[in-house]
Length: 605
Image 1 (cartoon, rainbow, N blue to C red):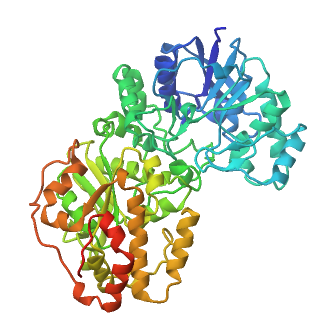
Image 2 (cartoon, helix red, strand yellow):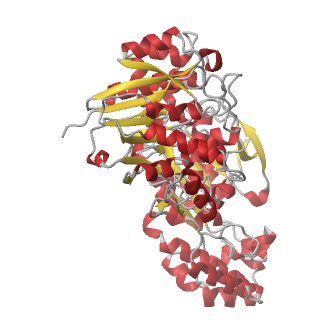
Image 3 (cartoon, rainbow, N blue to C red):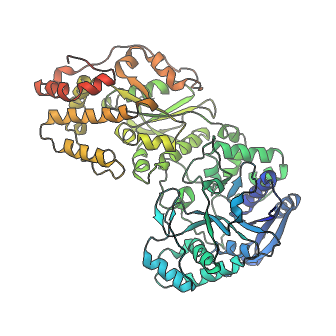
């Protein structure tokens, strides 16, 4: 059977208008099946405003049918406009509601799964409730039995009651789903004391509407609704639909930027609307004055409670100009990411400084954003987002923060350096971007390979005698082996394994400080050894004595640019005179085998 589809989206004056034009253009280009494109325009115009003539003309040129819809929940609840979309009359076999802030980025063929009654992706996170009693009250108010089974949130990985994201919802064309959805929304909205009804009312009501109509449900994956506010896209495995929320978020995804630029290159009318030249509103920051925003600034950036980079400027009114103008050429280019980690005092800051001497390379030395990014959900998607945000900020000439001394990246944190805001200059969108953190990144190596599969991970190691001698003479938390005080990589870290937690507890309980330091060095070395096949291993003495050959594997095949100052050979620094007999005995007893496997073993201090 050949299905016919109706694809419907809201085209609302203001925030959603230009987005709706971009979505329509992408659907017309990439949808490879029989489909009716429908733009739903909220009415009355006195309440919601009216799309511009330029927008209506573009929709007509693209063969998009426009229909009027009415918000039958509450004019103060702007999201309620989308609920009316699934009541629009159609002869299509399948009616699909698509949020206006999405874009189709590659050819889309019919899929056998659309024979199932209801198709939607589970929510990214459990933004409503996991309380059984609350869900019982929802289904009771709607007069239906609960949907069976559990679903898994696609970002936080929680098993929850069936709860779906409403950005892409597919239902049978004549199922009456829109009416059932509206009815459930009204009844849920009337429940007293139910938490987080708004702005999540539309999503809460999906499951009881499915149950009420007796539809089978199909859990789509992120192919049909990839939330780039949470997760960067993998260019090797791109989704169909990119859910970008606002222009600033889209601008950090090179693949999405390339698609937009291809679309505007072939349609000057779309280019004019997105760039604001036609007088159409630039929509990524604000709603019209008469339409209260259901989102906080944090939600616009990252999806509710997710990590928001501290050093990034908030979205502006000219975000589409960044994508559509000259800056978009750089934004559309991928560059190499580097994760720099290792055992503390093993040359990681020196490595940052050497890399940063290239004029198309930016390396952040221990950015404070890494800790909150790695402390959130697993896998740590927030760090991958932070890389994308930083790359976008650099390309747009925004200020970022780095640990600098004499206007250069600190090459030894024990020698000083302070956090300073600056604008690094790079040659193009393919610049190399690195970030350094020792124990936090070491503690997340396996999950970072999942969230940043194309990043090169560099781990620095050093002879345990020299390392522990440096621990004793630099930072108190290293000198004292303060394991319990570490939010990441300590025994209270919720995302380490049970074996790691037990080992860290055992080390933290050691009374002899020399033994404790040696045991901790060994533990960190074992983290590197477990992932050694996936790392670029850098030995401190080799880095100092032959830096150019050691840097080569990190930047091979990339465009790091030219060196701005010489990278010279030198001699390793040593402080082993501070080691006492207890240190030497402990290091020999606990560190020798791991040091041998890392090829940094030395018999004498």
